[in-house]
Image 1: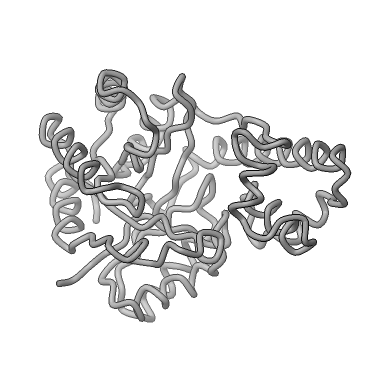
Image 2: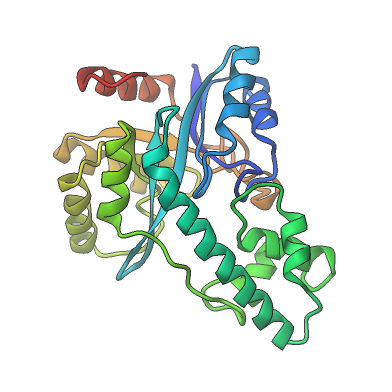
Length: 286
């Protein structure tokens, strides 16, 4: 059975593989298609596409946007971004600038806790333009402050960590509309990771659909079989397509492997074909 992975991250944001290396790894894993969906940047897409042509594997241009809700962050995926993303670039630059300001304040909080760390070290650690907490975590690990990325987030960088700060993100409707204007397929990423009530989830989904949502990420490394069934039911009731991916980040999420997540993820090629069919019906390129 041919498989695909429509949710991955590279060094352009908080993954550890170069975009081209990720695509070559996808080929080695036997995937028929892979989407590169970095946080708040599209800077790795050209390299990924070039590697895809060399390897003979479909590369879907994408990105992942964080949005703010009363139940915490919700993430929105844009798939099949066009070459010209000028409508989105200004917003991405703004988000990266705000993320950079947050990084500085987190580093200052860590310094206030007696930890020897500088923003220059964090920037040196990052190899892409979207710099975030995983890069701060990498510096903490390298300096022996914590043993691994999980400990870094638990002790310092996660929601209950000593140096946590919220980040400025988009409103959900704005993110969906922006991606729709570009002709992207817009998917609600890993909707079951936030433990919300059925009523809240239903109301939120309706808000997204009203602004152009076209898919739900049913298949994800951290979705249970029951979660997948809920997503499939939501998609059926709202006439949405299904998407799926591992959320691969390389060694920043070492237990998640490309294409198979923790080992049991399977996103069949039929999911990819159905997304393409949906786009064709809407007169959008694939």
